[in-house]
Image (tube, rainbow, N blue to C red):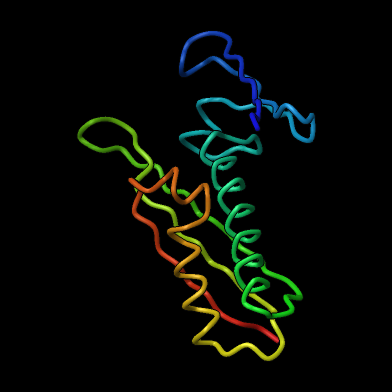
Length: 141
């Protein structure tokens, strides 16, 4: 299984601009120096990386809970990807995962234990293993 995404950049770093798109055509959008290193309404690679991580984590946690015999109502995850200037230049310096689950009959302890295992076990987490990650996992409802 291969997945595809495309990006194109026009011009220099600070005044240039680009576009990114996923192969499924579910998303395409502009990005720029300002959207990446300051604030604007456009996206950036780190934001898309966060979306991929949140999606993978939510799916993997739901699967692990289901495999353990629990009926999962929902799992919602937010991933905050931090990019900062380091001695070596800009780098992704951390990912903070916040996940909330609705799983009737599950204990908070088991939810947290399974979420911690998922933090190191989901496909995207494994790909990003060199990046420090934190997890805030709680049951709701």
